[in-house]
Image (tube, rainbow, N blue to C red; front, side, top):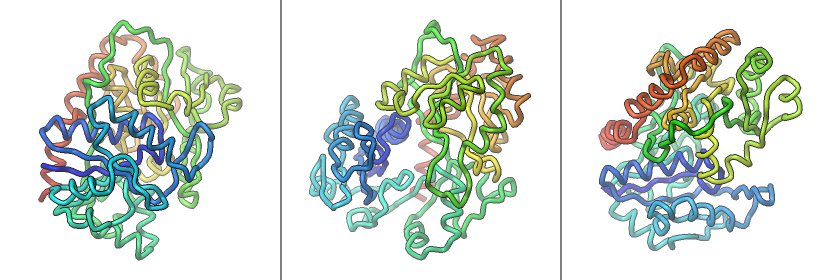
Length: 373
C-alpha cells in the first residue's frame, strides 16, 4: 500500500515526538508499504535555538531532514508552512503520492486541513496520542472541530479505557479504537553492560494548552514529591520545569529540552538510564484513561525497566517484572527497590514486553486491518 503519514516533527522538534512519527514510518515500511511524511498544521514551528515560536520554518525543515535522512527518507517528506509555502518535496510531489495513496494516517494533528489531496485518499484515520484532552475538547461542540473528526473513517487512541466503563471520559459520540505506539525495537538495542547509575524520565512540568482541564503533570507529581528523599536510589528528572524547587526535595534535574534536542540525544539518554520512574498527567490519571506512554515503550525497548504511574493501563499490559505500576508513594518506593534487587531479570523482561506487545510488526497489522475496514 501507499500510506501518507502526517506528524508534528517540526512543530515540536524534540526527540520523543520525532520517534513517534519515525517509528510509524519505519514500521510501515518494514511491512512492505510505501510511505511519505507530511506536516501541515497551519502553525508556526518552535525554534529551540532562539527559544521562540518562529514564522521562519528553517529550523523545523532542517530538523525533519536530519531526522528522516539517516533512514533513507530524506526525499520523502513535505512541510507546509503556516503561510502556505511548501518545503522539502514540492507540492506536486506530495500530490502525486497522494493521488493513488491507499491510506492517510493523521498522527495527533499532523494536519488540521482536509486539502483535496488528503480528502481523496480512500481511507483516513486519526491517532489520538493525547487522550482525555481530545475527547473533552470535542465535547465543547465547536462545529469546525467536530466536523474535522467526522471526516475520518476511524479514530484510534492511546487511551485503552476510552469508551469503556473503566473511564468516565465522554466519547463525544465517536468510536475510539485502542492502539499502542508501534516501536521498532531494533532501533533501541542497548548493551547490557552500559553503565547506568540512576533512574530517569523526560517530562514537561506544565503546559499552557487545555488549561481549563487542569490536567498537567505537576498536579500528580506533587503527590510523589518526597519519593526522591525517601529512596536510596538516585532519580534524575530531565524536566522543563522548576528545577530549583525539585532539587530542594531531593531530585537530580537536568534540562529536559537539552536531552531531547535531537532524536539521538533522546535515545542515548534513555539507553543510559537504570530504568524509568514516570508520573502521568493528572487528566490521564483522574479519568482512568488507560493511557500508556510511548516514552515508556522506548525505555522497555532499550531493556530498561519502567516504574510508571497507573492510569488504568495495568488492566491491559503485562506487569510485575520489567514493567511496574504505582499509585501511591509507598508503591513507588517498593517498585524502585524491587527493580534494584534483580536488575538483570527486570531488564530481560522489559525487552520481552517491548517485543511481545509493542513491536511495530505486532501493533501495525491489526491497526491497518481496522483502518481499512
